[in-house]
Length: 326
Image (cartoon, rainbow, N blue to C red):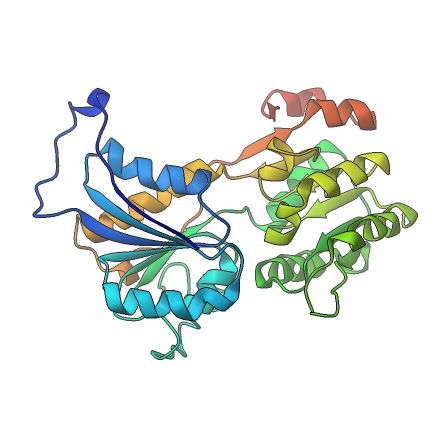
């Protein structure tokens, strides 16, 4: 498990920004699911840009949920000023349901912000986006499924859509359920096969994609999914071979793999927005339960042009006027 501490110092270019007078740096314990990435950069940089001294105590479970009880115990011992939680699964395990918190299992007594979390209301992390119902707030990072489907139709109208997902991940299941409510029988669900240990098997991805190809779907939709992200190179490469156009809910399948398109929130920007909410708690003294959970007001429509060329699946000219090509 990664263990490191570092205190942020503002670069010289930011000296014009007034420093915040405080006795010591705010201590923030950052609980990460799969290591430090762009959202963490945005969170850290929000404080640096405003010269708010913070000490970041970073803990990474590397997707091993068996480590969560130890994290909860450490938070109880360290008593940081704030806890930052990355990822839906980790947030659900560490925080518990908003209306059934168990102090012996869940983080209590410390304000919390969450980041890169899907459907926090449906996953019972909060009562509602406007009224969290507990000393927890944060950000949602994906557009609603309905908005994503409309964005997909802007590129190419569709009838049937397939979606592949890890059935062990609550965030993926939640998004797939929303897609099913919208599309009904026009959604082909392709859960990744589980091995004898009830863990998702990456070797089952090609067979799932072949089912989508045989069903002659118009799009392959990729929900937010840590397992699929870890295997995004295999997933997107095999989809290209089968001539399956991918539309993704998160940026990494397009920016750092061969997915065709997606309507996404940039991780860095979501992290910075989460930092803004954390600063409201630490610097301004706001109660986290009084801070609504929000999404970014602007999304990025990403299109990977090399994938479009390989698929002979070119975007409409009108879409290219507003999309970001990579």
